[in-house]
Image (tube, rainbow, N blue to C red):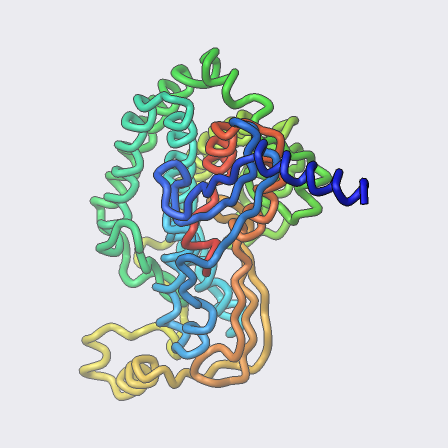
Length: 405
């Protein structure tokens, strides 16, 4: 009886000592719709439980009822900070299934778009880390460059955030001179802006004190959770899909994979900073390669998937037939299954596609890096201060749209 009494008294003492805090689901500091139930000892997180499902949109199931061309807009809503990478990852997945050959110029143009998207994604993530340490200036400063990147997207496809950019086989239209001018104008401005942003934060005493040893994860743990992207590389693992499993001719480009050592918030910040410099270098290389390719090519020869020119539809029976089949979603899709992944803004984004030859995928699964990161979040913030939990989340770049897909 004495033992039972002790347990009861201990439980009572525990209830009195600890408090429960719901961090989210809608809270400005969580940068999205997340809920984390925290067991607090003052400002120390004793235990944490992460929950998901608040904006679940069933993308995979919706996609299984749509023709292949109509699935691209769904991918916009995954990690919406770098939508074009998602778009092209999906388009390349279908091209892999139908065994389409894509011209080199189109592949290089895709690389330009994907690297611009990576820069835009990293600019948002890193500037928000600064905001969470109290440095608002950098956020306001670098957002002008994200806007300039969005202006390039808008010039190409008419949209900025949810882009639906590109088509199965290539691009909807060739890029006009304004696009090239904007890209060439952006690169030197971006280099200058990045230097100033880094001068503001990378050796800032307050920033370093707040981010070093904040939310660390070891390489072993990160691999055990299946981390990829900057979060894995910050822990010291040099895994990058662009190098390990090249696509869109990335194997022709020279760039390094930045890695960290401690896997903490500071390392995640620094890895993204260095990756932006590498992205600029890749874009410059791509622009040089594009100059050597025929200027009028912007899509591959995939008539069963790529909408013909309107004038062709009006004057050519074969083009009219293809137009009709594509619009009605009656393309000839081979039976089979493929997996294709790309290096997304925040990690490996993969598409597992099973086709039974029908007008829509029989099964489609998205490998979303955010879903994997969020599983480790509770473990990463245990024993830390509440303020560190906010910084850890922003440095992991978890996007709710991708988490709850």
